[in-house]
Length: 486
Image (tube, rainbow, N blue to C red; front, side, top):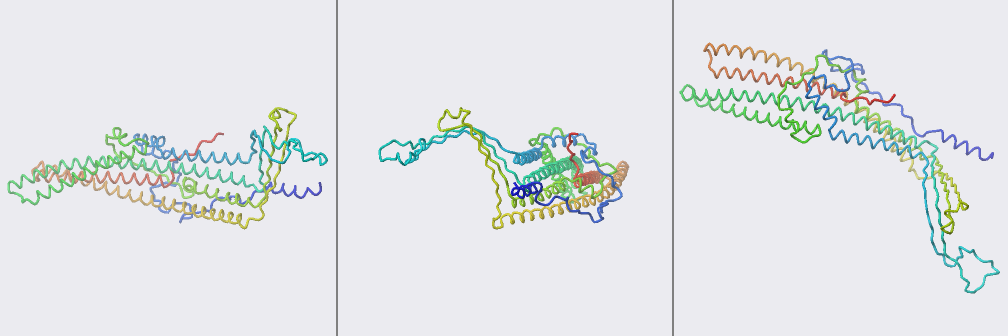
């Protein structure tokens, strides 16, 4: 017993350890301003934390809300992401079940013939051996019904590390699914805003076409009276054809964007046309925009969370590789009934039991385990670099979105001022036309300039809303933490 104590103690100590490094969290990555504020944040944004889920409600557009909800429930890419989550969770179940013993039932029979060997009767004593033609039973029959059990124990915690890696990879899969929601909601909102802008653009081009047709008719009348040469007629006709081309382009944009919204919501092209036929104004973002800070961005963005969980998984896989250095103990047990005849399988007196413990330790593998450990370490280093790159790109994305959002606010203010001046000029020209100071063609040109200013203003509003949507996307908004049971 004294000789058995050292190996028993060694095995017990090995069973209590876990190979490989423990995950200590991701490396710290900060922005250019030490992570306390965004560099490109202007005075028109707030450092308070934004609303993570359902940011599109801030636009106050019921039709947009309906489309986003339809996309979240019917988009095939999200269904595929959920299927990947289910696969990852079942992989965890497999790894956990691998630590448990397996028990199965078996029924076997062996039939054979070995010439020259009396299997059933046994060899006769030497004194009784003769050269006679005595019959020798050289056939073999064996029947068995029973249970078999197998259980493998690892002393270095390789299976625990494997489960740890599976859990982390499953969490990364969930984060990727949440990132798909961020991308999808932003894409639906951007497509919807572009559709509304295209509808307004089509209306403006249609109105300008009517005005230009009048201008062309009036110019042609003056040409017929000899008051104008032919060149102004050609110029007016060229402008009319350009407007018709722009109107056709706007109508094509409406069709393409409507089909895009149908696909995003999981429907066939043309399915949303009826609901979106009536033009609506472009939804505008709220006056106060909350953006938080870089630290909250890093903690919130799903793509960063996915990269961090992938890093944790790759760290755990180092332990899986290192566990191969240590021994493994397996147990195989067999319980059954059987014998040389078929009746023996129901005879409880012929009960048999077999226990086979097996200790395996591959101490000579010519560097295969070392190579696997180095490979896992290199994969962990790659995951570290990928995490750092993901954080840096996310910070760049947010800073770029902030810069664009601030620029679009300035552009919108300028467009509003231009529209105000165009409205004043149109009113003045209406008065001049009523007084007979200008012709109808001159009035129509002034009205066209007013409508063009209106179109530019709507385009500026759309650009501001699109910049705001891009900002929400860069901040990682549009998903929600799963509700956990208390």
